[in-house]
Length: 363
View 1: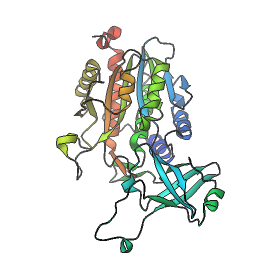
View 2 (view 1 turned 90 degrees about the vertical axis):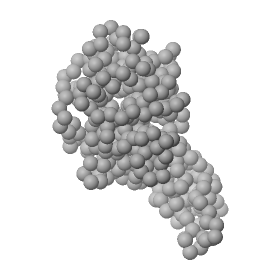
View 3 (view 1 turned 180 degrees about the vertical axis):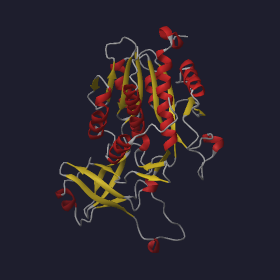
View 4 (view 1 turned 45 degrees about the vertical axis):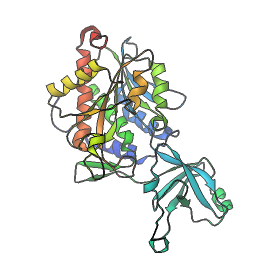
């Protein structure tokens, strides 16, 4: 594959729309519709399940099945309690960070549409300077500009409404993609781009390829856990994000050393099948794709774990995208890393194609 940029104008337009759309855990349907519409020209058919995982399939009748996977959901909040004077207290839907909430604008999703609000916070002048209180789950609150609980409820807001941040996609310094929910709708974008390249390059795969955009990863890998039982794959290559550990306040002795712009990250972990990982490493070296290594002691914390331990064991591997400021509204990745993850998954699929009888994964 050429070293030229593989992201075109249509790709970036889709990425912008896809990231700007809200797809909180449990409410991913609109994002899945956008994703399937983009993927439609490049696949033969689709599978969807009860909870909304979407799968584009190439060669659906092939007995051997390979999955490439990302997850579709983003962290969010739930309305948990509405006070008599119209303020809203929240609980997490996924790993939402309470420390970034104060002064953030929010969208509350109701049957009547979006209701705007803000996470309030007392002014610096009024706080106890001797012992300032930090943001915590029990003291952050949302203000809709209402004076009573009845006003809030009249807007259609009730306990259980999901809350997202409205922060939208931007590009910094021409090559840094910034948005909320890059974790991990960028994964869904990257596997869709792999499908596009296979189609445009007229690649005929000898196996079934299942381009899988799973739901509910942020609350325990649940979407992957369900869909792997439906697909029953032989091989799964998962892509997710991992931490760029070169920014301040991160201990490399604990987190390892990973830097945005230095290439995809290939993980060593019990859930990662050794031969599949080595195939991916061989592809990176053979195609001059830069890469980094990361060790995970017990679990990867990604959908890799769900695929690996399903159906009696599925040969699985993880290719991660270095990301700064995870679970904030300014998640940041490098454009070249995005392209190199796409290239590495693409080249790895071609290697599987040339691997006679797929014995590589049976050792």
